[in-house]
Length: 245
Image 1 (cartoon, rainbow, N blue to C red):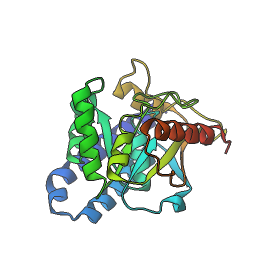
Image 2: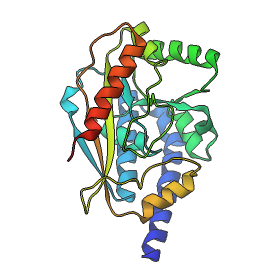
Image 3: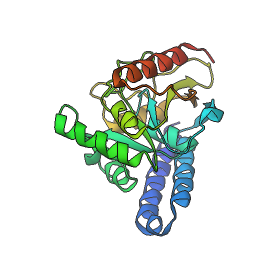
């Protein structure tokens, strides 16, 4: 078992190194569609290394190519789970940009970084997201933090303003993780409290095989109140998390 976990660590290191080389040497020459395909492939392979299977429910609900996607947040691997389904651009907290290697990779992939609690940063981010929503699918984590996946923290409404400004469609993704052996929810991927990235990775390596399930909502009604839009998104995701597999 120890040897198998050590081998998994080596595979992760090799996969990350491969991703860095792709970003440095290949990405600059790829068209947008080819980049998205490359991202999906890399993320799918990463999930495979962690013995994680992806289950997507409601993929047919996505009627638009460009939109704002709101998701609950459990782990750093949420981004790779979503990207394994469909490549998105993400809004992340500014600290992520300083993560070794992964922060650099996030920058190369066009991640938008926000300094939470600073009104100027939030206003600028709203404007930037609104401008990019005409061409991109952008995913936000409105809880502003990660949870253990059993509940949804209150959604912060600020970034929903971007969809209103851009008249862009809004969808929701509910993320859940299940133990493939028992079918019950697992908190193994949870990235909470004072947990570090390496500690979280080790928790995933040591856990039994996992099913990462994402449920996609129908397009939300076009609302002109960001608070109402945030509350609706939160309630939809909370209801989906209550559903059993």
